[in-house]
Length: 262
Image 1 (spheres, rainbow, N blue to C red):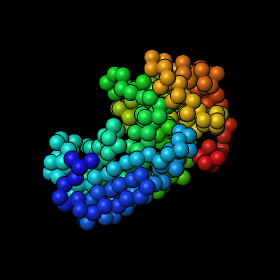
Image 2: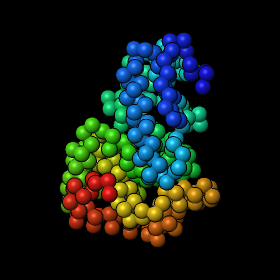
Image 3: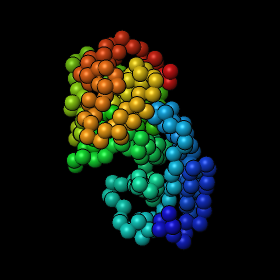
């Protein structure tokens, strides 16, 4: 971790498995990042059925020059968070923090844990072994609930899904295999993310007994196993059949019930 440490990062927060290095003027975002990591870890342990809290070392640089000096690569024009999964490192720049820092930090931590626990890997440009709807939906479970406007955000998402279901405009899972964050139409991209979140919410309600633990165990044991076959082997359902049940759930479920933690 020393290679990411520079002179002006002379402050440190440490709590459990989390370490935050920062300059004194960045104390507030450092506190928010630490709080987010702590809150996110509880969701991650619940969703992925893991016992140990994930580890993460965070470096918050005060300016792009310091970021580049430490990392050897400049911060991208739209980059707000950089995660190095193999090293459990997260890098931020205080002049380029995400607008919703709690949601983005939680999401990036979730991606790291998902990749490790599910044996996921990139198999093509912008495509992972696990389908994007499964990856995004799982990683949104905690981050969507950490938003300051979480209840309104999720209820609006549920309303959008119900409207799309009525007009037969829900996005099929086969269309959401590749990275749904790259869908160019912002409205369709937003619908896909809401859909992924609630598909996983529904999946967990159907299979509360360690779905992701069993899925990850199978995917890591059989590295050439197709992700859809792994899904069917654990659930007894094809993805298409699951999606049909999901549509029925949308038709018959109240929004407050759909977004509840239970």
